[in-house]
Amino acid sequence: MDRLEKINQYLKYWQRVFELSQWKLKVKLVDFKRTDFVQSGDIKINLKNKSAIILITKEKTGKDNTIILHELIHLLLWKYDTFCEKEINNKKKNHYFDLLEKTVADLEKIFLQRDK
Image (cartoon, rainbow, N blue to C red; front, side, top):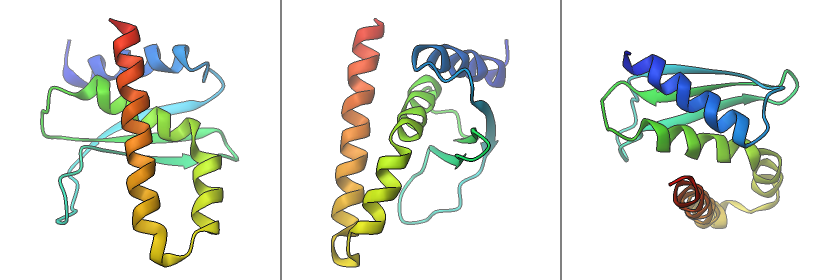
């Protein structure tokens, strides 16, 4: 089984756990261009169409399952996240994003522990 097939298995699993069967979810392997930090994943969400593309680094990290889980948690929090982002002034945006990523990482750990 190649890497993309394995990633799609992870996606199907977490999609079932989070009851996201009505969503059209795809995975794409990419080269991230950010230079300010190492990026392993991202998600592009279209709420209107209930579709999303999960971007995963082409570099093999051994963390594809965790990346899928992490990005799907962002999907679950998306409406809340976009609402908060609009309400926060620019001075506090970095703090907000740090708190959001910490919350997502904490939830990710909970789900991975539960899944063992």
